[in-house]
Image (cartoon, rainbow, N blue to C red; front, side, top):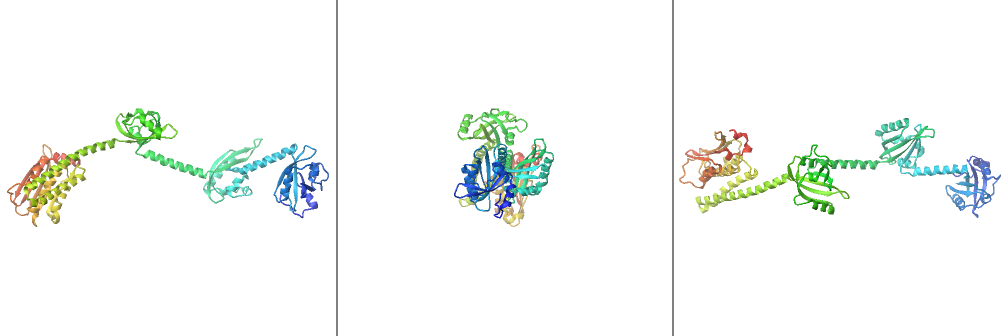
Length: 584
């Protein structure tokens, strides 16, 4: 009740009091006593208190002793308070009144409304109190609460609703709630809500709405259809919860789970989940592929550790269980494992245990390739050792033979040149992983030092063949020796000489024959050497011996001719050349 004007006196004041529903009076505080005086009253007041006229009498004269609550309430209301309330017993009876005070504009005065708490009146007041408390409880709920009548109009919203949207209850009674819905959600959500009301059933839905800050938030709403005691539909009461953060968290969790699932499904590392007792529950595709259970052979819970572990190697199960119990981790350790088809392979395993559970996770890698690589590494080391010894023997022979055919002064130059030729062949062999060498690459590399500005005077022609490491070493040394001789004495020692290098494969009844020729022409006249030195051994005997072939040397006057023939299988790399020479 708002403050009343000081001008409202006399008959106007009495008429106002008569409009009050219940007993009412105008009171005035008595500052010098804990009491107040009755100035005006309505007819309901006279009837309720059984008095013809109480004007001018004090509250103590009418009620008897005043409770402390009454004195304090009057003091508050006349001291600037907005509202006061107390209960007062009527002396000499069992009647109790609920007294509600509202201030007047004139200092020290107030309006008091009395409700009889005895009998039916008490029940009515109590019901009002319950309703007031229920409304306060609804307002204090952290959920948005709303009420729609049977005609679909919004009848009530709680304070949380108003605070969330920044509206008043009066504004929302005009069905403005549809304006708060996101345009993209409005049609579907509103239609679904109206359809549920038309069908008189419960409602559930999610929608984006604009809050008081202008931000779009996600609400999830639940509505319960309401019916009166006679079964008549009277509307729907509902609640809405802001689930923006929840849905964002759910989306992030789903995205995280999807990434984790993709990581597990595409990981090249096998992952298996099982129990400490050895029962295997689940496995990723990598584990199923490496164990051969990627078809229908693996059934979760149908396979145990002992079904596929053949050998625990040097890491027994008891040690694994101790480490898991102590640190939650075990490994890495190696196991010999049996595939679904009965074949076996080595597996590297790491294990971790889920804290507080008997569930363990194993991460496994197939060691077949590593073991094979290690085996090949051992073979390679032995091969390297063997070849190194052979190379040292060749170098030792080069040094000894070069020293025999040259003076001490010329030894270094001759030996260095032959060693360079040998090194060039080694470079090609290493580049080819000691497996094969392209013959054209070998010729180009060994002739590089001799060509120089004589590029057009050296003609190279031959089939694209790959040769074995042993053939590459001997043919490379022979080419280097022939080129050195041509530069010093033969076709490349003047300005007109030419060298033709050619090779190929010829069919024979006993298998294909490899051949290669070196032909010099237009150079200085050639004479048969008076003695045969180390160079002759390199281009003849060493070449013949290394490939099981035969060398022909023709010291024609117009130019040297060198020809090598050998069995194809001693010179040519079978896998690299394929059908080109096998069926020649």
